[in-house]
Amino acid sequence: MGTDAVAGAHGHNADEVIARVEGGQKPMDAIISATSLAAKSLNMDSAIGTIATGMEADIIGVEGDPMTDITALTRVAFVMKGGKVYKNAK
Image 1 (cartoon, one colour):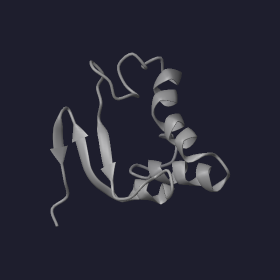
Image 2: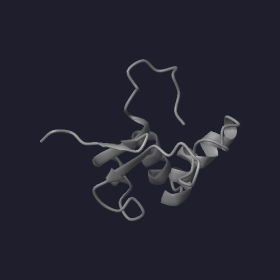
Image 3: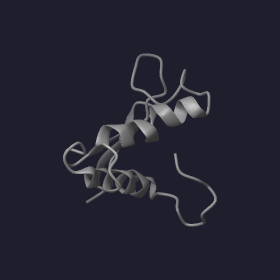
Image 4: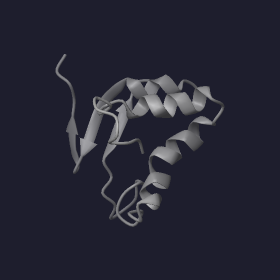
């Protein structure tokens, strides 16, 4: 998902997903393209890209429902990495 070709783009992956939905792609299809389909394209789908037993499931929790408002992906409430939850201090 995304590219390393554009300096300064780190942290803006949600923008690509939002643009896909604004261009007519269904929200779930855009999310799949950024997760499991991206992992498959890298031949890494046996380790990343889905939430399942034995997978390296780093996830985000967002404020809102991205199926009805894809911009919810920009409102990250927490990140879970390696089983540990990280939140911004308020």
